[in-house]
Amino acid sequence: MGNAVHDKDSQLSYLTNRLNMFLEVIDSMDPEATDVEDIDRLIQMLGDLEFKNEQFKKDHDE
Image 1 (cartoon, rainbow, N blue to C red):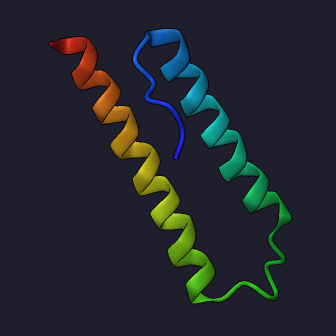
Image 2 (image 1 turned 135 degrees about the vertical axis):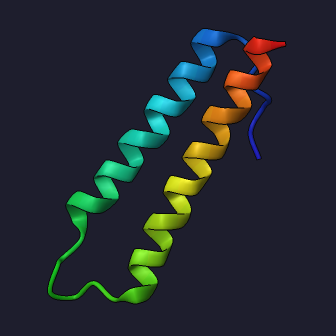
């Protein structure tokens, strides 16, 4: 994958970019054509974002 992100500014940039990608995915979805698998992918994306956020918070709490 990519390089490890260690400093706070890079971590914030990473999360911001991932959140923007998530929003772009939502904006591009057609509500009439969205199925359960699409919703599951969105939930997984949010879970990944939450995991990274918690991981970054833990890095700074140590």
